[in-house]
Amino acid sequence: MTAQITSTGQNVLRQDIVGSRRWSNYWWAAVVTVGATGFFLAAISSYLKVNLLPFSDPTRLVFIPQGVAMGFYGLAGMLFSLYLWLTIFLDVGGGYNEFNKETGEVKVFRWGFPGKNRRIEVDCKTEDVQAVRVEIREGLNPKRALYLRVKGRRDVPLTRVGQPIALATLENQGAELARFLGVPLEGL
Image (cartoon, rainbow, N blue to C red):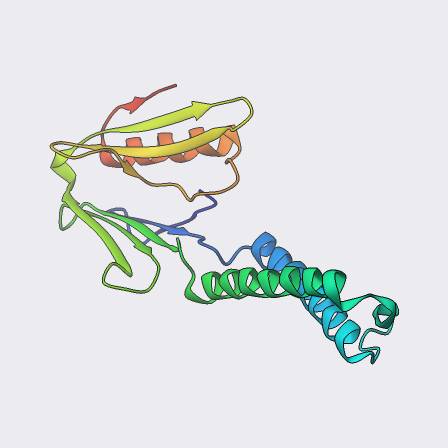
């Protein structure tokens, strides 16, 4: 979850969820942008016969088929990097989980992609919460996640998507949340 847990009093528990504004996403967006720009400049250099890259000489490339292929890969990479930068800018997946004993409400909020479902909110009463469920799946595609089991609904995911959370962190967060809500912890 890599959640920052803040307790505003003894009756409110708030977990901030990191979305797409992670260091690794900035890294990959920058790498893809630089690589795609290099491919695209190589394609333009092969067409114009003017060297636009300081570290190589793409003017010796034959425009058809090599320059066209490099231009295609450069354009595809730039579109992909644009997608990555927009996802970071919009902080897709970011939000918070708030558990309020005073009002008796649970609120799970996430930012989504632009459109009518940009704001994703799940609200329920604390008395409808039946359990906190931990899901651990190891192997080639590991999954470690916390879910909120709510009466009359599907399980509500509480953790971020992406890298699996450390097992000890997941257990501690699940136990703390179950203790705070006064419900059982399932799945361990």
